[in-house]
Image 1 (cartoon, rainbow, N blue to C red):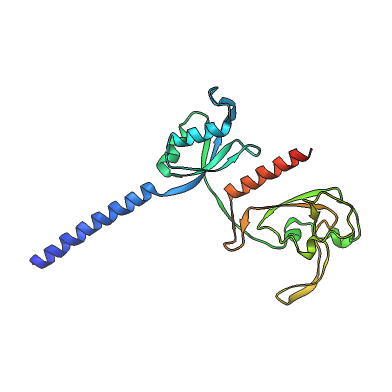
Image 2 (tube, helix red, strand yellow):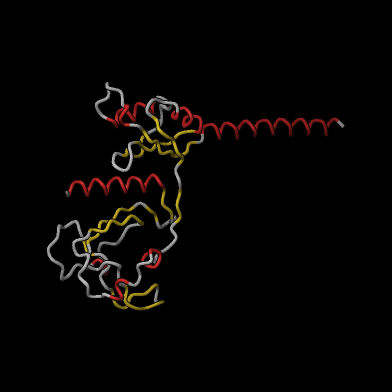
Length: 223
C-alpha cells in the first residue's frame, strides 16, 4: 500500500503546483483595454492631456505602454493591463470607463450589396454625381496601383486623393466570375485607412478607433 500512498501524495503535490502556476499566469496575463477619460477634469498641473493619460496609466502599472491616444472620436487611450490593473484604473480620477478590446471578423467583400446600394451605378453608370465627395474607407487597405483606382480623365486633385471604383474590365477571382468590376462611386475621391488585417481576417476596436481618429483629424485639417 505504501507505493500507492506515495503516488497519491505525488499527484496531490503536482495538482497544487499546477494550480498555483495557472493562478499566477492568469494574474499576470495582460489584455488590451480602451480607457475613456474625462478631459474636462484634467488636473491643472498637466498642460498636455497625453501626459495626464500616461501618468494615470503608470499609476496602476509601471511597465505598461500607451498603444494609442485618442483625441477626436473620444478622449482616452489604449494600453495593455492585467485584470487587476484594469480594475484599479477604473477608480482613478478622470476615468470614465475601461473596456476590453473587441475583435471583429471581416464578413463581406460585397460592400454595395451589404449596404443596399448595388443599383445606383447600374441605373446611372455615366453620372458625374459624387465628383466632389471624399469617401473614407476603413478596412484591410488597398493596392494603390489597382486599375479600380485609375483616375484617368479626372480633373486635377491633390496628390493624396484617388478615384473610387473606376470600371475594370475582365476582372475575376482566380479566373472565376469574370466581368466588369465597378465601384459604388466612380467619380468620388478616396481616403483609405488600414485597420484590418487580411492575413488574420479581423479588425480590433483599438485599431478602428485610431483610424477614425486619424480620418477626423485629416478632414479638419482640410477645412
